[in-house]
Length: 378
Image (cartoon, rainbow, N blue to C red):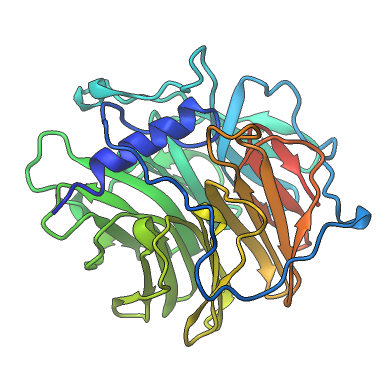
């Protein structure tokens, strides 16, 4: 088997951070991420409408000031007045303290995280003990928030403090002296129903890593994935989805994770749904696909060949997607924002070209982005 976890992902995350867009990980690889395709998948359906004046998304004064030397990769909130954002300070080289070949050493691969919390009025810095890059965050309540990232980092907020969580018993690594264990997605449906996904290498069970916390401990679910996972969403105890590299998509029915076939060969970076018959996934090349409970449909590629797609939503008629342009383009990093109203994806004009690494929408309808700044879009 090729090394779909370690080398490819190391190169991918280092490239993202070096470009100042998102993510980071170990260095030392000469294997690169496949280039995004400039065309949409065959059989694309759906419509796109040009943005109108009323469609513009404008930043608000809620955006924190003085963050030109910070970049953010994850955002999640328990409500409009309780939002968390995770990122890193941008150093001279723009790498945010990432590790490289030294990451195998006991003190290697360290990252200085920046964590901020919004109280409805302003963003404040929060003392956070993690020294590994945080890539995703999600929670089930204001006192149950989870953050995951590189080198198997898992942290939990209990309403008073952030504490590290031990997942070592769930991820044996075949005796490798320097295993690759990174978590790219987390979804907390309840305090005793938390999913985390990513990759592990080497592993006799394959690189795709799916972990579950039941309130007492962590368990790894075996899957036959040929590559690593990048995102997870769970709508019920018997309805969860995980997507990742090479277009992989797996569904959990309450007992077993089973491969689904969206017939797409692109990295699926984000997955979100409102229920069993309404699940969206977004990926590179501007890929947007939808599962209706029976099969996947492909939508046009949103007027961009974006390098990474991000999703968030409130219900089936209020879904948001963001794409950044690939590196090397004149407007590299400039985001494209889309809104789904239940029948049409509509491009939304943005007030700035700051790149977007993550999106979050609240129950009240607010939409926030995290990237080269923290900004309220609606």
